[in-house]
Every structure is written in structure tokens, then in C-alpha cells.
Image 1 (cartoon, helix red, strand yellow):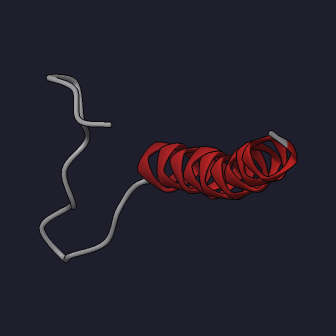
Image 2: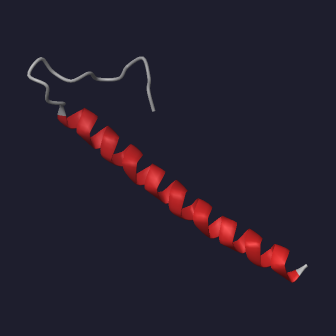
Length: 51
């Protein structure tokens, strides 16, 4: 997620702790969304197969 308050890498190419924490949280949310989507798709397939 990009915001106007996004922290950019420092001059030495590293990121601050807040940036790392934000990216880890975003990564976890995206992984959850992908796995949830697969589960929902499987459930839809089962429903369609039973009709």
C-alpha cells in the first residue's frame, strides 16, 4: 500500500524499522488474501458441481 507518508529507503539503501514492520504486515495480509481466495474458489467449485 503506497501512501503519501511512505518512508523511503535511507541514503545507504536500508529501510527503517517502521518501514520493515509495515512491509511485513502488508506481506502477511497479502498472503492471507491469496490463501482465502483459493479456499473461496474451491467452495464455489463445489457448489457449482452440486447444481
